[in-house]
Length: 136
Figure (cartoon, rainbow, N blue to C red):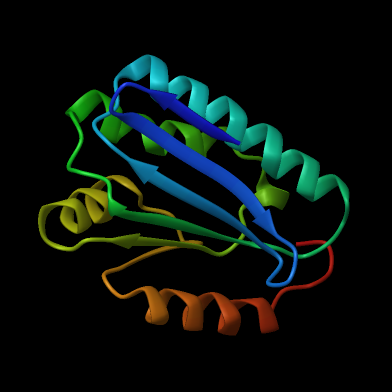
């Protein structure tokens, strides 16, 4: 699904060939946008989890600027709402600099890694999938 509200955009889609939930985020978000995104992401992850198939998550944030403190902190709130069985390997690709630092500060979880390089993120996700059981 693609959501556009002025300069605020995100896309969430499942890539069946790579068994990967792919997220792309752009623009400066407000709290209501973050809440809509979180609700949709959780619906998608729960639906995928119900299939019993393994999947990973790739969040492409290369076009996503540094966010306000409430929005930034809200991303960890979304992570905290995810059930244990859905805490799958998640790679976040940033454009570097301040956004990477913000993501590293806020998204502290053992299943999440932050990258500046898209290829490195894909390689880590591929490697992570080899250790997953079918229930993950």
